[in-house]
Image 1 (cartoon, helix red, strand yellow):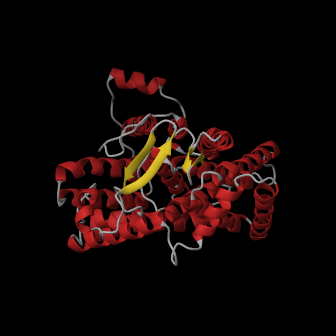
Image 2 (cartoon, helix red, strand yellow):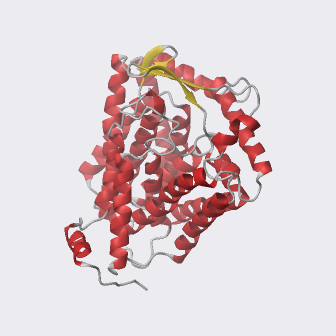
Image 3 (cartoon, one colour):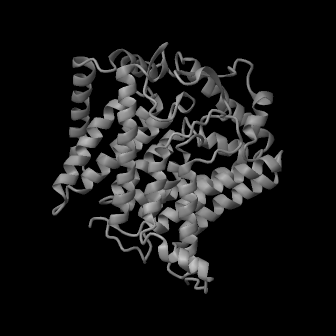
Length: 440
């Protein structure tokens, strides 16, 4: 049952001037990720970006709609799953080795995995809302992709094999994975929107624009030299194409292979770096490089921390405090980062670079169960119900869940994870009050 309260005059004025479609704030959250923050201290406990502020404004507006009785009913299953994440994080914070430090981590976890996804779920009410938010992913990716492509072509990017050719967009060398994340999201959103317009009566110009956007974004993604983003994008795109049309998936593989031959083999764009980086993927188990070896050691470290705190974990943000006492001696002190702005710096390794191991070490078995229940419910619901623009939500969710195998939350683009989860929740839990037919 909706809650209806009489608000004070100031709150009613705020509601009157609020945008009629809260999804605009979700789209703004995505686009504001592109605003350079100039943040240099990666060890700071709290980073607040313009995108974070926009996401909190979205949460506030949705809360205001809730108080005014304008909110559509939230699926009880979604409430239970999100509530489980809050409970697990709260228990981990209470039993933390440092509750004061874990409190900020608790707030961040609730923001990323509960409040913002729930707000996006309630803000996205029809196909127009979905197109708006997914379009913001595409636009953000085009902005970052254009900057990144220019960095590669003009040799003004971050250092890669001693050369300033790594595309990093507007994020800087200390957040080297951010551009590839944004571009990956935009490429998948464009593919999903293009496939959604293949139905009878679909927009031809929108379909062509999205195909063109996804084709362009393949280049900046390639010259980001991010193996993790390449793999996650390939997995998510495969799921998307198979869910939409199995025959189209085969065509997509052939077209992608042909485009790679033309761009890399024929035109030589990113040839040496991309080829070297691709070949290194096959050696991650037999002969891993230093970054892969460090990641394995960080996973082992997380496992050792969990063994000491099996049920509720060591507490949010506790991994970085316990890392040195549980890590093998061969773990390096950090990774190298360099560009024309910051020069050369060593970036400390403050997380296990695996979201599932991070949850296991900091929130224990209770946390792992809560997060896996949420993720699996979203994935199962999207696989069952995704049509139309919902296909893009499925692809984005697959990218996040796969990327979590070798990455975790952190950095400027973290808030985008919450928007993706919200879009996936709208597809998985459409609700009786949703004004959308996915195929419409």
